[in-house]
Image 1 (cartoon, rainbow, N blue to C red):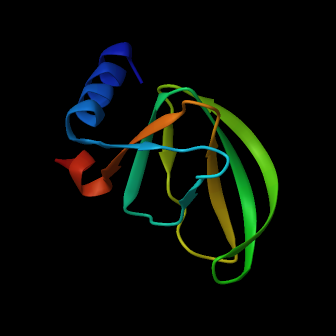
Image 2: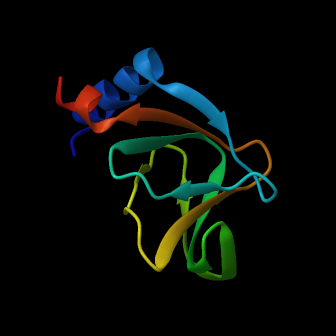
Image 3: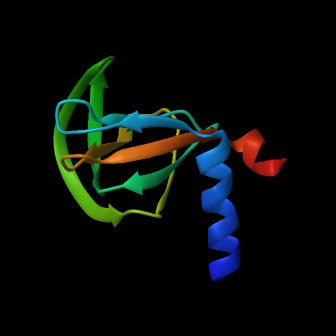
Length: 102
């Protein structure tokens, strides 16, 4: 994406997005395909977790780290889910996919 495209996307998230602070004890489960997140500040580690029973996440399997400006997309429901865990002071902005299409 060009710098101009990145700037417009960031501006849209800043204008319309809902801010959420995430951390090790307040992770974000990426299970709703309609939700899109932009890392506004800090770093976010992405993990894969097994959900053998409802609301009981299993062991975290590390995938990678995202920096400010990165997009997070929800993957939907299933036996494996994505879990975003923020470093101290990490914040994301949340939008719906329909808001992005407008």
